[in-house]
Image (cartoon, rainbow, N blue to C red; front, side):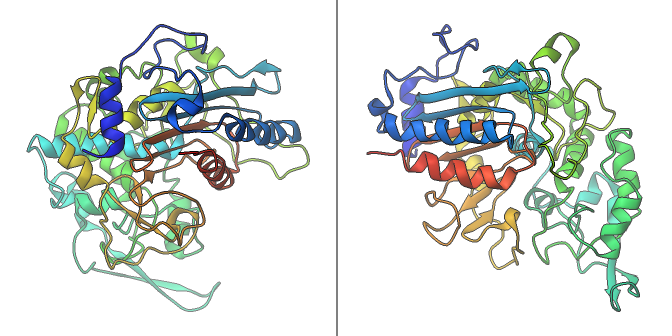
Length: 421
């Protein structure tokens, strides 16, 4: 049992009545002051000051932020606007598009089925999705503008582990200029207008970017994993997540769309004046046919804290066990080894990939502070969370801005500089 687990167990992870925080039934008690859990009030105030400057400059419309340490909520703030255009204030229970923060939740769903013996991490994906077994690798030759592509058999078939750790050969079309990337874009992979089954059928007709296991590359792997969960469980992904994860954790505001009676809480993106137009964001009011396991959920600060605590606490939440402690250890271990990790913000040096989360290996090397063994994964629109077992720390930051990687770096530095002891 690690330090964070002990602290959270000691706090009993109990809910308590609202104490002026503005949201119902928070998951941890509130520290009398940050110093009670080894944090500096004056240095935590820097987070608020810096975020406020970003709100005033227009780079973010508003934000909600929470730092928990040693089993207690040490600090939280609600700043700016939920809807800047309407001049409607941000609220603690605002609902955000969390994009890729969906991936850890769906990965937990898959591991639940593994624990029940209904599938194995080593299983071929084609066991559940036969069409995936027919995919070829697109091998390109020639210069830009004159490149050609030959389809060849992969060196081996894709496994469930490949989906969990992004070594499947599946990619995001917008993250490159290859002919395979272009094929993804032309096929409109990721459209919310197709079912999960139709998504896989369309995807399976496209080439892989590389043979499974050859390297790590971020892509639609967790979307395919979501369809595997559907086939194995016999339920839609939304049904399975709600029954097995969201409802048990009390994540009542998390789903693939925002119901009509909650739309007044939906956080809206803000177009920075004179900046290039933002990529259109999905309409949270529309129930999609595609329940994207890789990026389709909406959620709140409180809801995601519940999930973060469950993972940090070895799979247990307030006496409800969702996963075994050894399964969580397995998920937060290095699953890449000598496999190439690529480059870019989704492959920071110093980090490896586990099953559904990035995991820190070194104290240094990475361009962001942290501890060996901390784990996280952000959302494309600057939603972010991480858990640091060594520092007994869990952090959730929610906004709606295209500057996702910037805020991941910024929040890391601002939180760690506040640790006093």
